[in-house]
Length: 370
Image 1 (cartoon, one colour):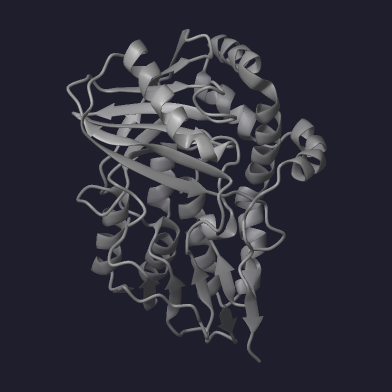
Image 2 (cartoon, rainbow, N blue to C red):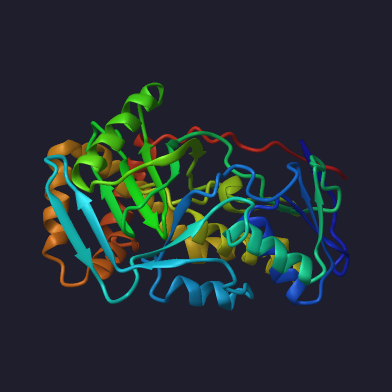
């Protein structure tokens, strides 16, 4: 239960949650010379992750994601690997190889270890004088602030393994309802370390069976060894909220439901929304936040809901047809970007898709203290 009153224009900026969205808000405000206090319930950053590889998508905007992150005042001090070639297996196990001169996405590691995105953001925040109170959840922000407390439901889950391997570096994905119903599976290998996972958008109860099939498929098609495997899992939720603000409380990242509903990528949205929230608070105009995130993310979020609605109807035959279409694209990155950008078709379909794609996201309670 969060309470807020009017925030002094030059007082400290409070942030609840030390994930990417919360620390992006902290870094934006600290760079402008503001005092920032971050409260995190866990003992360190990245507690939800296990040094697993994730993708920092590079297709939802014209510019490169690393340039956008730099423009937010965040140093690119974390380890990253650009992916310019992706092999996708369709439901019939046929391989489709997509190449691009521009990175399709960047592989980054998540967790509290050295070189991860999370630890890099923490180090930068501490270096800029941000106070981070670990092991100290803050359920009340009396003066308002940024709420970055992670997902509030499970619209999708990821189950997988992190492991060591002698396999060559590579990025692989697979689309099949036998591996990941209404979702996708992936295998990422970088410098002797790997992550394999199934991302499910339905039938969560049978997650173990889907993961076993995923491992078998990639071992058959790619041929890799798994040493010292460690199981991991996670959840995500997505929505297009009417507002991401409650008085002077501004919700960012997954706390607001800001995640692509089609593939579940959300780090770009998290970093951008955190920075936008900080700017609104620094200007003493928290009421501007809804306008800012809707301008930058609103169309992408609505299109994601439409894409999720259409993809969930395809089934294995449709996934194969989708791979066939991308095969014929001159530039796979540009083709994917077009599908994620708002259009007249997505605008017309959105009311139908919104009713059909129901989010399990729990709304945060907010009580204004007069």
